[in-house]
Amino acid sequence: MANVTIYLTAGCPFCTKAKSFLTEREISFQEIEAPPGSKAWREMREKTGSGSLPQILVGDKPIGGYSDLVNLEATGELNKRLGIGGPGPVSSLYDLIIIGGGPAGLSAAIYAARKVLKTLIVSKDIGGQVAWTYDVDNYLGFSQVETADLISKFDEHVDKYGLEKLVGVEVKALELTGKIKKVMTTDGKAYLTKTLIIATGKRPRPLNVPGEKALIGMGVAYCSTCDAPLFADLDVAVAGGGNSALEAAIDLMKVARKVYLVSLTPLTGDEILQDKVMSGPKAEIFTEYKILRIIGDSAVEGMEMESLKTGEVRTLNVQGVFVEIGLLPNSELVIDTLETNRIGEIVIDARCRTGVAGVFACGDVTDVPFKQVIVAAGEGAKAALSAYDYIINQR
Image (cartoon, rainbow, N blue to C red; front, side, top):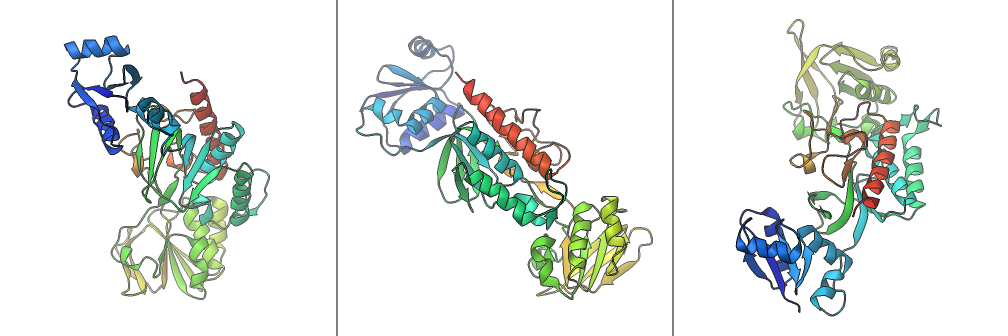
């Protein structure tokens, strides 16, 4: 095996990463401390042409820093340079990994495929947030389409290109620095890529009141499309006053005996949805009421609320509570590495760039306004085209 030399210095995170990388692969190496400006650092710069740390040499030939080391392994070139027989276990190096299988992620996948990028989609499901609603009536080309049919069409379109998909798998960590990014999943595997698109969408915002967490799945729900049929001929409450709450109330009025809509503020949803709820004989609306707690031991038995105007406390005898008070961005993976706004959305520019080279974001997880299916799909297309431009302009 060829000799490996690594020039490094204390406190350098990429030096530590390079050492760990070599140690994990049982590749012996010589360390040379090379603080900037030192004799060893000047020697390193003369041999490699670079003053950045770390610098790694195989034999007497420089290969670059940590990200270059990862890239060589991903392509099988590292074993060749080390003189190890055969290519060894080589991780696939993707041009693009997309995290998320909603409209933004699937649209990005289609555009990536058309640019002949080697692409992997990683998602816990297909459809994302759009699967939480029953139908869509504002997507171009469809006056009205059931959500299941729309998701199926999206998925079939992606499958037409034969892209790799990991569905039912969640990402637990990301390494975004350097030319090669690493995506680590909860099943213990790691995937390498030149570019990354984050299209992880949002999740329901909880009420954070007593009884809510303990009764999730026992009467507390966050998706009327998924769970409304379970409440046939029962009394239910919907928490919220925006579009999602109004849509949930409309879904529930089809099956429930009584639907109470409880909002902390005056209703803010679209007027057409407000009219549908108000005209429904099963609906009763309470605005400017604060929900205090959800009552029940092994199942929901009621909900307690307080009028913000009068201070009156009332109890609704309901068997279900649907929480529809907004969404939180699924940005925990990058909250410390990418710029986010005050509510945790990833900040992007007009090309879906995040500020970290090779990392893009699209859809509802970003700070782009107007969270709509058609907007997410368009942003996904932009993100993929931006990733392609990034790859072809790399030196």
